[in-house]
Image (cartoon, rainbow, N blue to C red; front, side, top):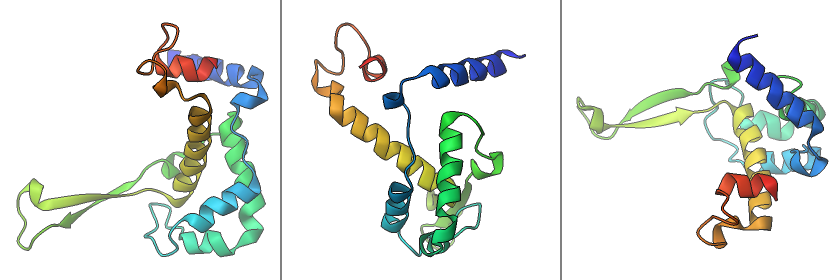
Length: 152
């Protein structure tokens, strides 16, 4: 087993023994709420899956929620092709030739956007609950901010 694989294996073992309060628990209603808050006609990402389809096809919501939970628990991995975005360069002005004349737009896969939004909302709530940034410039008891968040 290579060093990276052993680190992944160790992280999965730690995750199994972590208390439930430290886990991200995916709830179908919250996934649905995130989908409903996303702009309907926003360009789909590399997966070519439009938000509109996910919003109004409720039958796939339990499967999607279960998939996200399996990924969060470390039972399965996010498919590699769904972890990559497509970068498109849009011209800022006509006849653009210089790199500075273009604006890069990153199109992330739709499922990745939903997953990361859910995890982001969960972490934001956790950070707000402990509010370590207002405790001495982010340091409390000689610990850095990530240590404070994870140990509290």
